[in-house]
Amino acid sequence: MSTTINFDDGLRSYDLNGDSSRIIMFNPTDFAIATRFDIAIKEIEKYKAKNILADGDIINETSVAVSDLDTFIKKQIDFILGNPVSDVVFGNVSPMSPVGGVPLYERFLDAVSPIITAEIEKENKEVSKRISKYTSAVKGLK
Image 1 (cartoon, one colour):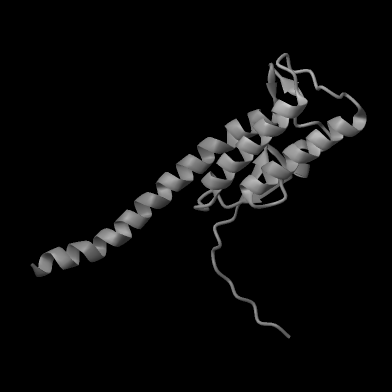
Image 2: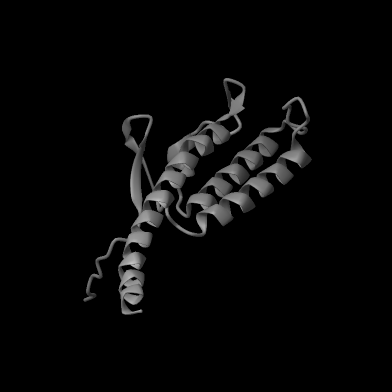
């Protein structure tokens, strides 16, 4: 029998578009999320450069090519957030599907980015408060 270790690992739950049956979890304050975000965006851009024309048409519009592109983008989204969220986010809809002229995956990333930024700023304030408790004690010794 194992013993459970309980601690706050930073994972937060978010429902998508007010639909409580579509919940994703990720740690918005994960230090590595910004790095993964940059890596994934570069990888998506490289993949798109090889497979998508300037007008947005897919070079090889076979169902296999489109499916490969969808799978690639979904894997990058999961990589960014460190959790398998893409199936909940996109369901059976292609992440390349345009909504108002913008691919769905970009709309999702545009919605997630401010959450990450706000949570990181909030955590940085908490860290600063905790550190200042110790630095002010050291300053008082001088």
